[in-house]
Amino acid sequence: MIEDFIDAFRNFSRSKTRTFLSLLGVIIGVASVIVITSMGESSTRQIQDTFGSSGLDLVSVSSGMMRRGRDAVTLKFDEPFRADVFDNIPNIKKVWYKNSLSATVSYGETSVSYSATAVETGYLEMCKLELDYGSYFSVTDDYVGAQKMIIGSEVASALFPDGDAVGKNVLVVTSKIPFSFKVVGVLKEQSSGMESSTTGIYIPRGFYSKKITPNPSADTVMLQATDKSLCTAIVTDVTNYCVEKSGTEGSVWVSSMQTMIDQMSSITSTLSLMLSGIAAISLLVGGIGIMNIMIVTVTERRQEIGIRKALGASPFAICRQFLVESASITLLGGTFGILLGIGISFAVEYVKGQPFAVQVPACLVSFVFSVLVGVFFGLNPARRAAKLDPVDALAS
Image (cartoon, rainbow, N blue to C red; front, side, top):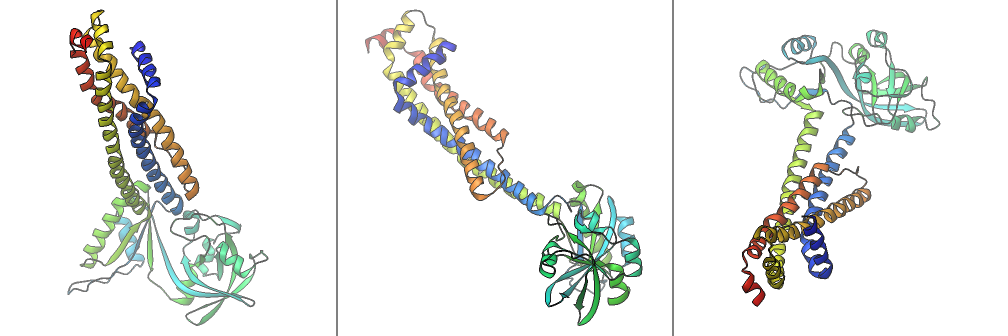
């Protein structure tokens, strides 16, 4: 077989143009599969990088557009609801409440308007929002309703262009009521999942419940799962529980960042698989071209086949010779296709600014498939060569 490989490459060197044209279909097919799968994997990683690594274990519950029915009950995100959810929904580590409010924050002559969020103690740490400098809220801050504030990096840059925001008092106007807040922390800019580290404005929920809306129900409930892989199940369980509790569909809107990422990744993978299947068609077209070339090769080398048979070569040896030659073409095509595919993927992803990611399994599968295509389409010409009568072959 080693001699057959050597002979095959020797024959390729004699017919360079024909060999190149035979290789072209295989190269394009393999390269296309690798580029498509690589782009799909890169898109998935970019989605994950955009969302960040934090917040993947959180499920968000907020009021939905409920269709009122005769027996419908309005759900309130109060303390009894928190206790019921924790007791009735499995795999929940903790239940967090938060409220949102529109706020205009001023310092000196500078003002910014963003949505502020009243959060419970430990929520920002749980979301892995890191501080650039300053400190988080304490349990006491939440209990007494301290007028303290943690702001995002963009808010800090707008209000305090010279830096040093911590310790400064700002004026906050919400619902036309002014309050004075002391900035105690500035967040570090990062991919932070469900919360913003750049435009976020956070105050203790204790202040919100004491000074703005006494004994409020939460706008949003954040359920922290014991493991991010359980978020999809929790979304289903919470939805069913709230439908049963309220007596109507659409009483709440339940979402999970991990579920959204999984859905987008699934769509990307499906599209990549579909496009890879289409790209693989070019491999089959290349295989048909190889079979055509090999049939021509057998016809041209009839005398060589006749001489080998006359000298005692068995039909199996003749068949193996042409089968190896056919497989060698696709082996070369697969190798060049992988190199071309990786090169194109790197170039495209470099231009687009995506993370470079080549699917090794896709490289292996496309390479093996290309070799199998060569074997399959080379089988018919090889069998023709093996069946040639030596007398007829030498006479031609």
